[in-house]
Amino acid sequence: MTKYLLCLFVLLPCYSLAAFSQNKFEGYNIIVDVPRDHRQATCAVRYAPQNAVITVTDLDSSTPLDIKACEGSGTTLIQSAVGSATFRANAATNRWCFSGKDKRYRISFSGDNFSGPITYNWITETDPRESGFLNIRDFGAVGDGRTDDTAAFRSAMAYIASKNGGTLNIPDGEYIVSGPVALPSGLVLQGTNGLQSLAATSAINRNNPARITLTGQNRSLFTIGECVENVVIRDIELYAQSNVNTNGIEAFGAYMSAQGFHFDRVTFNNFNRGIYAYGLPQTQLEWQVDYVNLNACRFIYNRDAGIHVNVKNTNWKIEAGLFINPRAQPGQNADSMHFERAGSVIIQNTFGGGFPQAKGGTYLKMLDTANITIIGSQTEAMNYSIVYNETNNPLAGDYSYPITIVNSVFGEPIVFNARRTLVSTGTLYGGNVFRADERLRVYSTGDRFCYDGNILGCVGSREANFDRATVVFMTGQPADGKVRGHPTYFGTDVDFGAPVRMPSFPQNALPPGRQNGSMVYCQNCRRSTTPCQAGGSGAPAMVVNGQWSCL
Image (cartoon, rainbow, N blue to C red; front, side, top):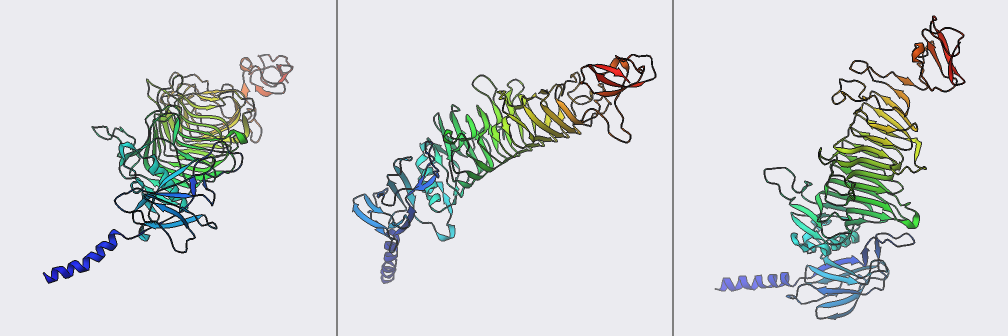
């Protein structure tokens, strides 16, 4: 009995200390919010006025609220009442620090004229061995597919912003979000896998075990604003219950750029636009979003487009992507990618398509761009492969920046409605694909344009590719199939060598409609005849006054 009492005497102080030990809470009067109507540079992460009064509310009534300012922190405790306390941050650093018995408290303050009142669930400082690694459930998220977890996500973003970065883990569960959650710089948000819900992975189609679900219409799940850098999202499904004007990621701004975004194995499922980046009108859409990388991401049944971009500069790389498009119909463009304006975009090893009886819209739609490079990519069951300047804007197009296509496969129509340089190498194009006028300049090496009738899918196709485009250089069209090969073109249809050899035609095949000064060799023409006449041993021929004249 004596030993028992001794043990009890020793353990009780330890238990009491554990039950009533103080936890440390640190942070700033921080605002994480993306404004739309600002008239000067305004970062998505900013601070409330230094004299803002912060209210701490008790979330656990089983323990007394015993809030104390951290010694030496400069935090000023104003008053304390049952269930709440108020204080001000350090006037010099805008930082506050207090201690309390619980693991989580509610923090609220007035915010600014863009954000309105601010409320966060703030957690205690983590174990130093795990510092920087957080769990969304620590901020109050439930993940049961019914509870609204918006406050938990906004709180986590504010906490990470106060640390200038951190990793947020999303364990299995369906997390409901009802309003936009602004993302801070330095964020790593990671789930458990990037499968789309109802993927055909087994005999039973099931939802992704870890997904973030947006409810309602006319809203976005995550937003990105000015001054945001180096955000990583990976191994998670972003899902929308409605595709009416919803976005998975909505990035917008006017003054300060945003840059450095990495999406790895992320699924964007059932939005209007999976990713939507655009500039605001107060600077005529001149905002920039630079250095964006998407790796092995999936865009599933997004109503308008998987990716829609309208910013001044992008520098995007889309690699190993998959776009599964819904049926294109009125009010549903069903495009894979849409770049109104873009610079230095690389699309590599990326597939997009619909279904034979429900074709999608356009794989790649552009209005006006700088360099675009497509490598090892393919689309099928779409209405169009590529459309450039669909609206026929007379200012669109530039010969300075090429669109380069390498080792890809495109069988659906490709439309160019502007000045543009197309460089293509080793790509297979289906029959009757190109719909371009003479403003398109084509530099082709080793491509197959269905001139060879032995190519799969080319039998019966017309030799209509580039019937109006300006073909500057073309090779790789052998005459080994049912349709005789197309000749090699260089410059003005002249083969340069030593000596110079002009193209050779019989008199009845002299090309019509050529400009004055065009020259060929007429195989059977008589010399000094205008127009050229047959029956001779051959003569050089030149177009003079609109007709062929033999010299």
